Image 1 (cartoon, rainbow, N blue to C red):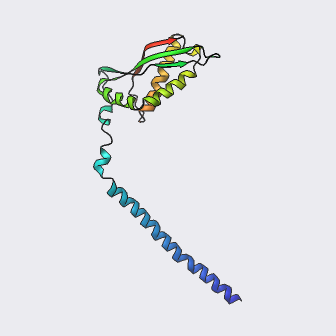
Image 2 (image 1 turned 45 degrees about the vertical axis):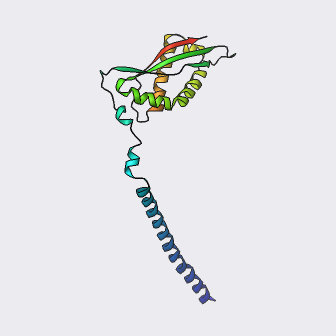
Image 3 (image 1 turned 180 degrees about the horizontal axis):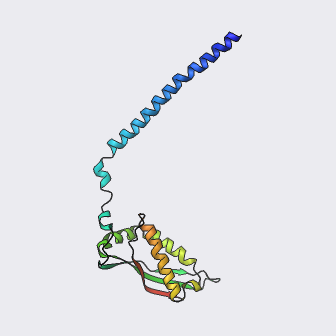
Length: 170
């Protein structure tokens, strides 16, 4: 009886090593196949063409001419008990002239996302939050910071200012 248990134990321990070797070979073959697919399926020339706009997004000179990117008009109800107050705003984004085309394309591409954030942000505002010079400047700064954060993930603020062309609260 003792001899039978020793034979069974030898079979179990001996049977585990070949399984580990087979799984190790399969693992390394899988890694090799994955690397080969990436190397041969995606040539370097195709990967590089994905960034034509980056050349225009360098940090501009301090004395560079200014340009303006128009943003669509937004009309939003304020956070009022009866929703009887609303704000209408129309603004431009001040950018460096050398970056105008690239930023305009980016704003057009991300317009739905930017507008959605702006509407949600303005709907949280109360009349007291948008009244006067302080409310106006605070709102400009919030839009400036969030648009830079959403459009440029590298942390460089390319939108220099937000300039309201029209801002009405009714």
